[in-house]
Length: 257
Image 1 (cartoon, rainbow, N blue to C red):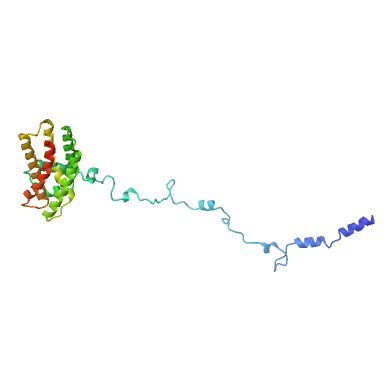
Image 2: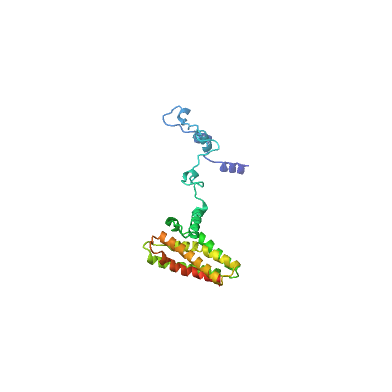
């Protein structure tokens, strides 16, 4: 037993004292407080909203907007900000340069060679009527058994180039190729009448030749009248009518033969 007692004494031998434990866990007294009151440990309490969540803090502020109508600014301006609206846009035909009133006036000017031409209207590059008349001429030749669409458009392009070069040398004012093509195309309307006659009757005879000469004079007189009026070429109508007559004579030959 002495051995066990000696073992216990050696095993539990330590300098640990219960008073030291209580002293170690005792709170140190702040300086200046001899009585150990709890007033020295009083800490300034934070404000009540210090630890509040951001959602709660934002909800406490007053909302100045409108319900279901957030104050959103779009990067695209409204339709009222644009000066031109859809109702104020011009018609599609006007944007394409197709004016039926001017087309009708040019057609009447060609059909009546004695009618004075308006230079402001005739100096436009309107190709709607010429394209229709060229197509009508080719269709009438097709009904007569002659497939000459390529010849019609080919001679029209070459003739417009030659007449444009001639008028550029003769006139003081500048002339555009579109204006020359427009005038020559509108003056092709009498030739469409001749090709329509050739569908039902033969032009290979005295009467057909005389009718072809009248149509050639009609076309060349109308074209020269419009050119002299639009380009201010007074006194040069017959000089312009001669090359125009040569051009329309080629179309007459296609209608006859």
